[in-house]
Length: 441
Image 1: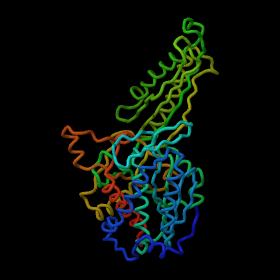
Image 2: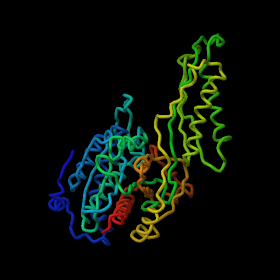
Image 3: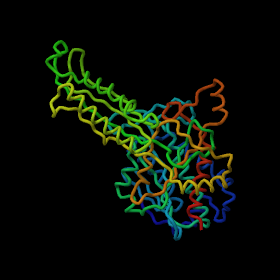
Image 4: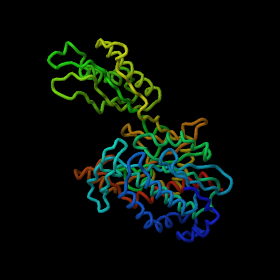
């Protein structure tokens, strides 16, 4: 999908009900007036989630919406990625990203618009699919922001680069778009922005800080080889299950004894598969790990340590060199996400002025979640990035939990849900304010 419909922008704006004289100080009312349209979009996206790398219908709908308001839209960037461009005079280029993919989770929220979708994943298995990380809200907010900025074209100048990103949940979509020549084909942005809805934060609040925002993440696979034998004659083989168990135990020393207690690090073995029958010593065992850190130095040390421990435990077990455990560090990986200090300072002033001090919260890292947004910013030369959260849960629900009421479900839970109206309105307003500040005349 590629268009040049900018020449017909005035007519298009009339069709979708925009006014050419929208005042910047009337942004709140304009977003409220547009919410019924965005609400229907959110319901559509929520009811029709798609898995990572398979977001074909989501991408098509996003592209159709953006094309209808005057963007030049290209589909299929980095797989199923969407790039929508709009030039409005000379000025900087601002990238705004929304991730599109859902997760293989069966929804149990009881919502009237709950997902009932099943989809065949990239491994050939049919699984239930749910937007249990809020990407439906992200895509809806991107469209809402685009609609506001088109209506306010007299208030800004420069170029908008709107991104519908695939496979954030597999931390591979941003990298795929970059490797597909995103910046060579469409231009290198001067700034990159993104948001994420936060289930356990008050709905409508905008949350951010300068510097570290998310941890790095590396998925690591280890295949531990053995020599098959009868379970009644273990001395005739090499047991990969015993060796893999020793590796799992030894890996715990990386964080406990090799990383400073003042630094953060996680090495979790999330999967251990081996064997086929009670009395057979198998020929291999497979481990799957997730590795998290808050600095690239710690990240490098953990990854090198995993390889060192796995291979040398194989030597301890007496395996020949050509049968040492094989460590794959290239499965899924993303560096730490860090907000550019100067850009954060600038946008902090604009956000506090336009959406109010009472609606701003300081971000506090409470887990080692990760994001692949850094692939858009960690290029040479770097692109200043700003990533913020928008609260998604009514304060009353948060207070009820504190008083012994129902637990507010977190991300990736089958019970995950947000209050769409305050979340989407806050997301559209905050992102619109940020873009207007960066592209102001």
